[in-house]
Amino acid sequence: MLAADVTHRSIHVWRRNRDVFLHLWKSELSWPAVEPMLIMIGFGFGLGTFVELEGDQDYLQFLVPGLLAVYPMFAAISECGWGSYARMSMQHTFDAMMATPVSVDDIITGEILSGASRAVLSTFYILLVALVLTPWFDLIESPLFILALPLAIIHGFMFAALSLAYTGQVRSMNQLMYFFTLVALPMFYLGDVFFPLDELPSEYQAAAWFLPITHVTALDRALVTGDFEVSLLIDLVWLLVASAGAWALALWSMRRRMVA
Image (cartoon, rainbow, N blue to C red; front, side):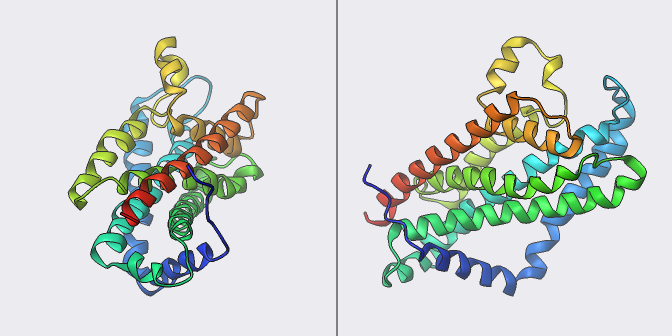
């Protein structure tokens, strides 16, 4: 693959998407802010009454770091899936951008940055709710929780790039659901979000290591609880390497689509 032709102009692509978001903020903010709260209430207060964890940890305390991982993932995937497909194939926004000094790689990278921004915003929603509930349920135990925001940039970039790489291969918006169903949802259920992995067979734990969300959840859990281990550095490096690989894959996939 040729070297990436990315310049400062990718920020202009991001700004364009930001301006559209600010224009539509009422509809854009509603469901992404409400759904995590519904999950927190339904699973944390409902299912949580039937779940017993080791030690004195409440199920809602276990759940919050997982939500900090999966809902930003959904936000990034949605932005660079349905959002990018609409801009590319329906609104022809990319065609208009290509008539300017903005390069193809600038457009691709700007789209990924928009997805990462959505992940950060989703993380902010969940942290805000968790902070409000902390006086009653001790959900946030460490001041390092604030680092979940820059962490969201990393894994948001990764998931946005993976989603955009897939978007470059589809020919119908309906096909985007395959990525969500076959990639995102399995990680939602199997990525150390709703139940501890260390209570499962070693074979499953080994397989879960290859799921990106597992590493995100581990890091978010450490930031919320303050329980750090050296192995978390491996999780961070894993995400950084995966983000670089996902970006390269998105560049390859979208170049083929946009210059064909």
